[in-house]
Picture 1 (cartoon, rainbow, N blue to C red):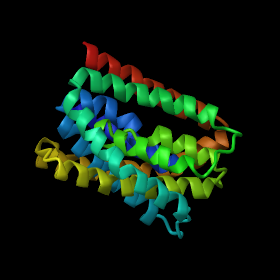
Picture 2 (tube, rainbow, N blue to C red; picture 1 turned 90 degrees about the horizontal axis):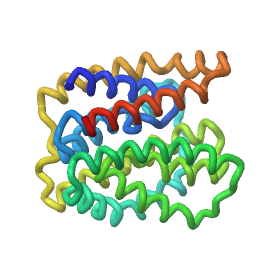
Picture 3 (cartoon, helix red, strand yellow; picture 1 turned 90 degrees about the vertical axis):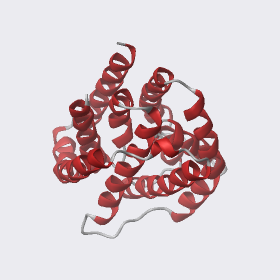
Length: 241
């Protein structure tokens, strides 16, 4: 099972390198299936921080996040993160695993529902609260952020940079919420961290040319959708079997 989780982490890191999101959506289903929920949350927050730092600082360009959106989202995520810890403690592992898989499906639906629509700025606190709650319960904060930011009609570069900045902030908020609530079970295993950190870095570098290859082929959307659906199926199978 650890090997399967490592493969999912590598696939998630490569996908986020290519698109700016997707690490937890791919990695979380199998990581949650291979260890206790609290430890899975801590591990994914740590590895997600690495992925987002590599996305923003590992390329030879100046990131262009929309600061105003990030500030409002992160401010509203604070109470949501505390609520998420309560869910993490209240739900059993299978329920959390199903919730993670539902989050992946929600992202696929969100990409279609938000396309072409304009969302008002007051939607940022709603998205932020939901993202905070998902960060500390399932680590899949992508769906509410994706819906809101697509609806704000950002440029592709702004979108790709704003998402990682929000994810980095959510990681800090999530760790703070876990510490404040005394969730000591979220501390990841040191040996596992030592194994997965270099795997994430290698996968991230490998994913950089993937974006260009997919966009040239014309199959970008289809490939991303298939990867996410495979993650859902694998996560549900490992949770229920």
